[in-house]
Amino acid sequence: MLELQNPWWFNEPDRDWEFFENLTYRIKPKWLNEISLKPFSLNFVIGPRRVGKTLGVKLLIKELVKRVENRYAIFYFSCDVLEDYKDLLDILTSYLKLKKKKRVKTAFIFLDEVTLVEDWWRAIKFLIDRGEVATDVITVTGSVGITLGRHFETFGGRRGHGKTIEVMPLSFHDYYRIFYEEFFPSKGEDIFHQYLETGGYLAYLNGTLKLEDLIGFLKADLKTLNRSTELARDIIGEIIERAPSPISFNTIAKAVGISPHTVRDYIEILEAFRLILQVQYLGLDGKIYPRKERKIVIRDPLIAKALEMWSRREVERATLYEWLVQEHLYRKFGEIFYYRNSYEIDAIARNLKVEVKSGEKRGRYPKDVKVLKGSEIPEFLYWLD
Image (cartoon, rainbow, N blue to C red; front, side, top):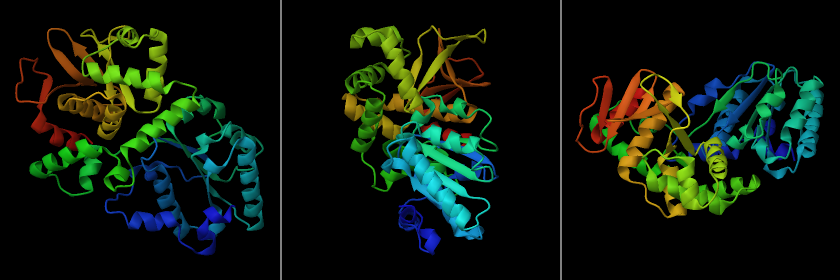
């Protein structure tokens, strides 16, 4: 079983390398440079499904194959065929025996979609505690459900030089760079309208992903957590229906007919899946008010299209513009808030205050508020990255 997933051991190409070269639209992920390759490291690569985690790892392996003296030093395994941590431990033990036999000093171990394996962390923690992988680099990938079980804390100080890398759909800047090296406003507008349709999912752009697939992934992940797909759909429908206005858990609860606690639970799960983002209220006094209504952002245009289809609600173009600005500011600064009183500020990130207007009407705002027209959004997003 090991040799089937590691063709480079026999000087054979991996099929994902060929797949990448044959793609119409492709880009080498920048996040590959963030992975620690210094022993000992335990890296976590997390993100929504189909954002390119597996393909990115395979491209890194292609580079490593050129650098290592012994190709058996690189081990990849797709964990979707395993049931539990015992199976995973058996696989890793088998490889470590092979590593010793082939006299490999430092191994680069890649465990793909490890979060599909029940109690996966137990196998890795066991080997770390026994010192079996002290000279190796382990990189595990998985859906963002990896964070739900608080397994990061499980490893404590056992990660060595390892890093946590979050992989999201492409930003507008990276998406634009697939087509052009320099930014031109006219081209930016054209690519932006395309971005609104495809989001940052290269798989969708290349025709290897459907909206129905994204809905299916979400439903499967919800069922794994023993959550109702019907409730999730109804909650998402209310979010879309009332966007981009601030909304409370109580408001959604009354509309759906459930408790505010249940609404909060589902929204936190959707946020952990990196599908939505909660934007809290920031007062003029600089304080955050978590009890006030919050804005809820769908983080990628393609996800918005999929959730539109599933909930049978329509996302207004003006709402999508606001969401994109909020998402990109969040990626840049790591936090984002909003303000609303006699006037509204859609996004506050550090010292940057932005109000998004899809049309040309601006209204009156304080001088420190940047008011973006719809036609100005592409250039703003491009240079933000």
